[in-house]
Image (cartoon, rainbow, N blue to C red; front, top):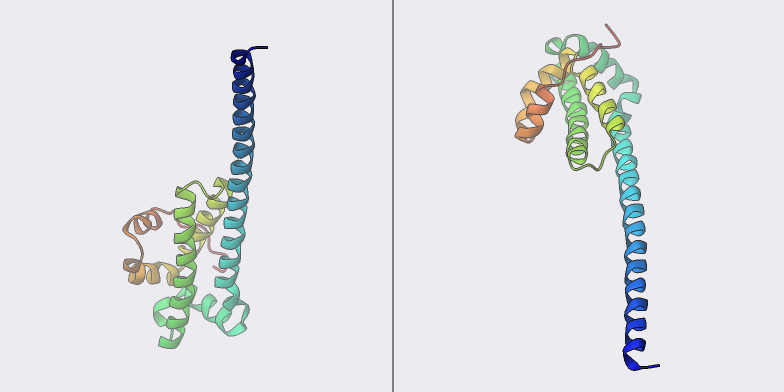
Length: 156
């Protein structure tokens, strides 16, 4: 056997090894991307649940129901509670907005969040608070929320 044949065999073996390595890396990267999307959904779900956890307290739930119908007639302390709740919620939605825009959030999950936000925006409290506080969010997100069609509010 001559050295040229041995060199050719070595090049073929090297090329096969490179292709195999690239295929392995592609599988690993795809799995990593899937895992990152799943982790993002889990984090988002936890953040939404944490934002809503205050409504499990009867006092804030009552403030939310009454404020949802007539925000302007609420006491100042109740308005602060409602502003705090909705600010926390909109911050989570803003993060989800950018995750969805970057392809890191599945469309069905994102659309559920959008529809839910539309439901909140059908309330007096949410529309008033959004109008008062939207300046604290990115211009792009403000435009997005302003374009959401309000949904049906459950307590009217």
